[in-house]
Image (cartoon, rainbow, N blue to C red; front, side):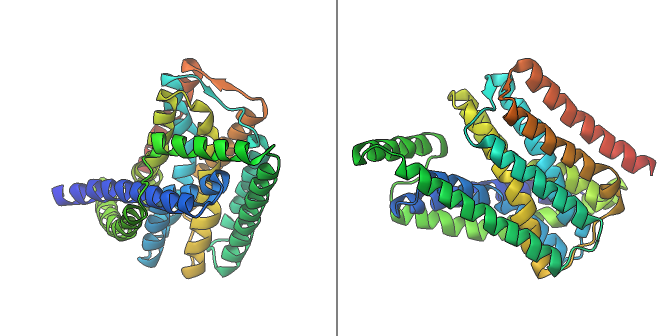
Length: 331
């Protein structure tokens, strides 16, 4: 039993580290190629921080553990809103009025509705994959166009260069992006090697622990695995709050939730069909939907999260964890 816990914990640590170095290496290469920072944030960074969830869900689905595949994404989206926004607000005031956040949050709520509808037609098959990946293509295309429009609005080349330099300094300060191209490539390789290894050990440990505790794979995925794979987003927003860059938090959460639903579930169901556990359809998927609407409200009303609201969000997440286990053990 001790080995199972070590496998679960070690796998999560490997996922976090591998996902982190993959993001840093990808951003470093993107900067060298002159890709706009907005596109980097909405594509490479968002997909990189979602890489642990992708490997977990894909590995679980291939091994016949559909509950882990779905529960990981649903649980991560819940943790991203309640915990990833709640904890940084306990450190510093976190503004949720970032430009463009409301528009993107509306899109996130829309795809959440699409995802919920698809789940009630379980199992999720290639049809669901085509729908979700098509929406992902729309999102990425719109992000690229938004970045191009933003660059055209710059007054002159000097202003553009100054903004690019400022963005690079921010990424270096927050993310530790490597300047050397070869170091960035090494980061990418390490990330690509570490992610599948971490996913394998996490799935093995989680399945064994779920059996020992007498709960389903979905419960472990909704709580332990979801929390573990959300740690990169949590660490990023906490450090942003400490460095007085709290305004990036809601953008990070919205982007991550969009990628979780469209990219992770889309890619996974394109490879193998996924059965959606009934327990998720009854409770957890509606909590995820509520969190998406809450996120839209925070962005639309430009709410500044303080210590009180941060404590409320964190307490809500702890209450959700309690409810999941209480419901599972009473069933």
